[in-house]
Length: 484
Image (cartoon, rainbow, N blue to C red; front, top):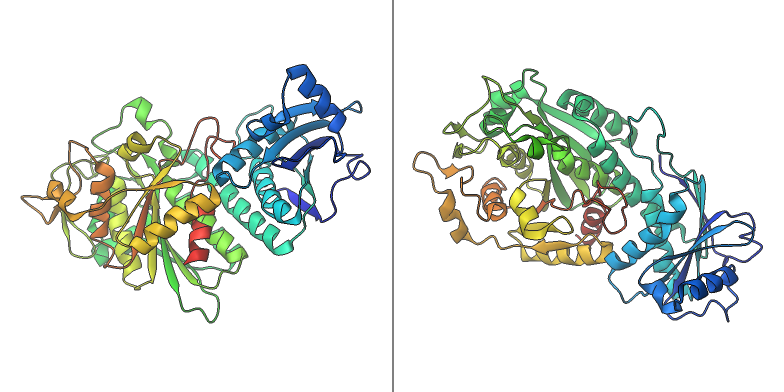
């Protein structure tokens, strides 16, 4: 559960901070806390002297001090000209020592001019909220505890903070779902959770189960799903439709609850963690929840491709030829390229409604992690407008993306002798681009952007988020919807 946020427009004073035990002091670049008589400045001075440090050091790394009354204080200095990602990272480091003591309450003290306090307060509140959540844990002892309350001094714009809270809650939903073990998030259990979430948010729900999809001719999706003994795979369609909206957006998410690789079985080290292969669908749910809470004025149709990629006598195999929902015949080359198969038919369903924009999210290819590591995610699109908006949204939110080419001549590698297109190649070179070229065949020529979530997890945290599972894409997605 997200901590409560208690904002106060008045700056933090010694009297207001008298009862605080864990405090993050956020100063603007260039501010002298000593001449400005900022609370706890004496403890900072002692720490600087002991470390032989300078005030400017607070702009590069957090510094922690302790007052004579036992209050733990962490200090950072934000430069609003620096990238949002760097500011988020500095705030995360500043909060690390405070949250390590597992407090119930955290205090944020924001200083500077009103123009400086507004972005600093929103960024500090976001970082505190996303890291104040206790993610699902199965430890029998020493279970993590989340914050109960975040007190914010120096800013209280309700609209800004409501947006911060909605995005943080969406991120927490995404990370919580992604962290669940595969025995607790089978397709059937996942669908049950989605129905409960839809009831709480007021979304319309439609489920295309395996048999319905088979009758419809969704051969690409069913090829993957047929390997499961429990025929619980489905495409789940959720709709958020406020009144008097003209623009429509389709969000499509890959929801492979566990990926063995199928007959092309993954080795153990690569199969470990494959319960997180549903992260794209969780990102879509996080975005949809945040958009609903913010009452964004556009219709959003979310399409979640939920299945498992199992090995069994019934599983699809190399050299199979299947017919997708839009009539395209596909030669199966590698059964571990299942994500593009389930997305193909799901994109077709989404495109049939002719949305103004289509965005899909997937932990799709290992080659994107090779290309970027896990600190950026890659985007590919048939629309320069969407690509420009994607880069800008990444800069604005600190969830950085890198654009890749999607030129037609790449598709030579996917030419098949027995079908309309190969699913992939065995060489794997530039597979992130080939996968996007494959997916583009199923978008109905709608303006479309694909995000390959190479930054879905990052050991040690990434940007605002301290946990290994990052929830990357939720803040970016809300910003994209706002720009569209």
